[in-house]
Amino acid sequence: MKAVNHYVVVDRIKEKQKETSGLILDENKDEQIRYFKGKVISAGNLVEVIKEEDVVWYDRHAGYGIQFEEKFYFVIKSSDIVLVD
Image 1: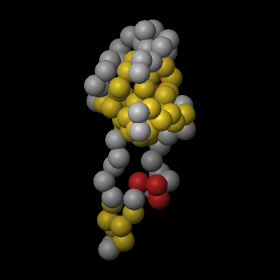
Image 2: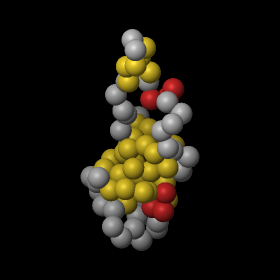
Image 3: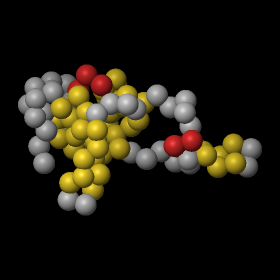
């Protein structure tokens, strides 16, 4: 699978569950999270700074999901990436 143009294929990194006062909150319950973390699987030919294997932070509403070979990935525009870790 190879991204094209300004698109990036990302494998989202699941955050650990959070425990607060005995309650365990999974990441879906925390509405304060604005950005998700993911590992870059493929970067398009017009993407300059980001490369495969980078860990990036991207807007939670960015892109769309795609299933490829039994695994679920996100396809986002490089402009939706805010940090490279």
